[in-house]
Amino acid sequence: MKKTLRRVALGLSLILVSGALAAQVIGKAEDQIRWRQSAYNTMAWSMGRIKANLEGSFSKEQVVQAANTIQAIANSGMGALYQPGTDKGSGHHETSVKSEFFKEQDKVKELAMAYNREANEMAKVAATGDAAAAKIQFGKLGESCKACHDKFRKEEKK
Amino acid sequence: MKKTLRRVALGLSLILVSGALAAQVIGKAEDQIRWRQSAYNTMAWSMGRIKANLEGSFSKEQVVQAANTIQAIANSGMGALYQPGTDKGSGHHETSVKSEFFKEQDKVKELAMAYNREANEMAKVAATGDAAAAKIQFGKLGESCKACHDKFRKEEKK
Image 1: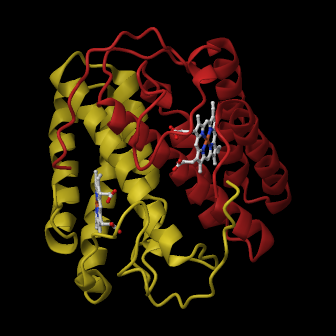
Image 2 (image 1 turned 45 degrees about the horizontal axis):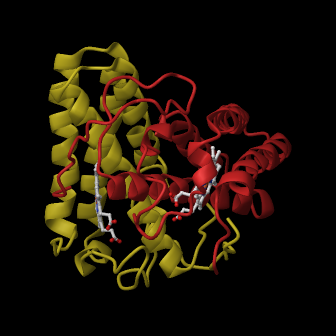
Image 3 (image 1 turned 90 degrees about the horizontal axis):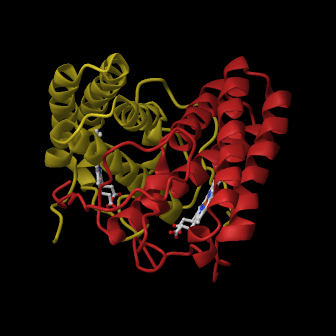
């Protein structure tokens, strides 16, 4: 928290997510990359928890916690963390984003909106406590993550 | 997402947060450390956004997005990411947790509950769109982060 959050004056040409961005964009390139990698990791943790609950004993409480976390991040407007100049650089590690991400904005938006829809639906389904429905929705949500990775994320090295 | 989420059979002696943990604990030590560092970074991003909105032009939408993200993480039961054996080790980098965290569970719980309360309140206040109230609540929330860091997190090196 001691790290200064320098506001960088950047154009807002890159409106990636529905729910248009408003005024404030924060962080240097390395901050933005670290934050988006962090947000994705937080979702991966949450997806892992849902999976473990579907495969093991099902705790509605845990699935709700995880689904709500994914939902909040999906609605956080993290498209703002893809400012021009963040196609290269290092956050926790070198960014895995493909340069196409910054060129094919319509496709990014389409995939981001699909994921947003599935994430909101996952939270709704989790709240019902219906494990069978949660399993189906978990599959759809996972597909929506994968669809974006297939197109816009470089292969993991390991 | 290719990284296997190995469930580790661990005792649940460490019930750190209100809303007791149920069955599933996932991840190896390095995963748990990476996930908690990620979740904290996601909150730091969100705090930075709220701050920028309080200091610059105020977008209710952005403050709500950020406050909801913090709220979801505060309610996610991330105490589960502090299993025994995660007092040392590396996630994105070497853990900064102090060993006291694993010994003073009553104090951890007290600080975690205070932060949980402030995070829930922050989301409530954000939803009203009242910038002056948001500023006050932001201060309280920040104090609740700091209270835990002062006691349980090692000094940042940089």
